[in-house]
Length: 371
Image 1 (tube, helix red, strand yellow):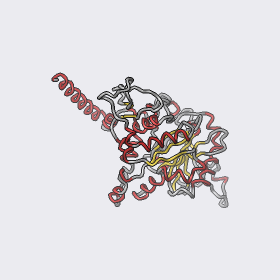
Image 2 (cartoon, rainbow, N blue to C red):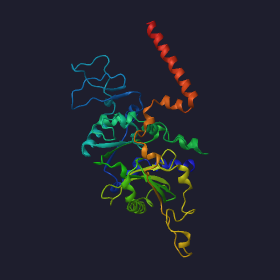
Image 3 (cartoon, rainbow, N blue to C red):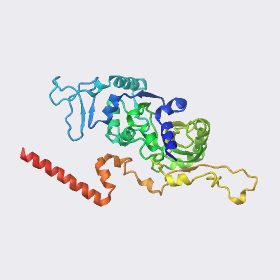
Image 4 (cartoon, one colour):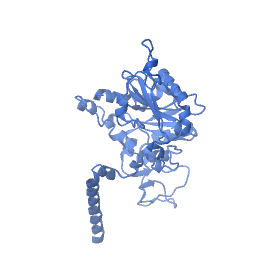
């Protein structure tokens, strides 16, 4: 895929471009255009949360977490260490967030243009994407590497002869960012969400999103596959702007209706889950028109019309993924970015990082002793 195609794919999978055309098949959602002051807040270091209007909170002093809520002290007076309420710089956004949460029943899940802060759920009180207050939303957004990528590096990795020209027109300060708040799906069953891969308007393959083994899914496969195929043919195949994309669907009991959860760019940044991107790129109806068909060549004559059947991959009982309960998803994103970057250099990179860390600590200790 050249640069222009990649950028167009990112634009098409941008959340504002997805919500309006597919409102009838997606959970109820609202879009809030974001202002420059709010974007500056998201990009700023540290986590400072607005005061809660409905409760008398004291200033937080948990210096380890780096999370602070600006509010008056118990005495009602500000000390010199108190921080100003950050929402004073973007009051209209704060009020819209409150209104939408109430409008959608008091519980929402947030997302920016392309990414949801799924890597930051560990910091949320619910240990999930569910948010009941504006501060729940701000905390997830500011703690997420995925959201930071949307804000700072959405078009990284694009190369081509027109890269300088096109990427300059896609600078972060020129992208119209939106906050998407979606009504929380009650009793969402993770095992019934599936990721589907489309190239050249052909549904090539699909797999489960939750990488754990669920025995009941294997018996449902014969009914789930045609449901997803019919949904793609009727709702997405000819309406989505791009020829190639990745979409996520949810099929709750009684497994008769398909809900569109997300549309992702056809790009390496989108997780292929149970496939590899090399596998997906090599799949083609032209190479194997029968797909997963069980008919043998001997059973087919020259007049038989060959039908491509998308591969449907589930975690099997003996697959390595079936034993990943002890490894939380996105666990790598809980480490400081410096540590993750250093680990990319192998043992020598980590050793160099630790040496720099010791030097910094030593200088700080010497400075403290000198005072």
